Image 1 (cartoon, rainbow, N blue to C red):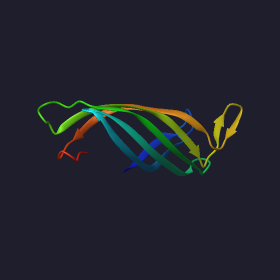
Image 2: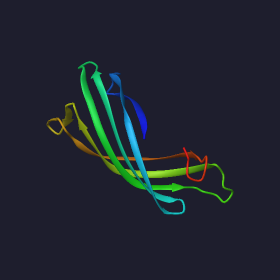
Image 3: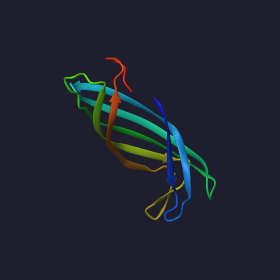
Length: 126
């Protein structure tokens, strides 16, 4: 479980910038050595967004493969890569849609990336 913060822009061409804050939970199920499946659930909320002072909230749900590049030297630093697919659900705002405004839209979502895990012990890493 971790907290999240994103800086975003609500108006194209103008910095109607605002912060969204929230949290994220992730589960990992190992398949084989170095390969696992990740499921991720996150949600964020922004309050009193300028210039309308409206709110914005969303929840995203993602699932996909995660690969850790382990080596035989038992290094504490383990690089990884992952690709997650899923969806996002928006609420607490009006979203533009085809020909109208939508109050609770759903959309496709994905994330791809990588990083570096630091292993403290065999069963505990960050």
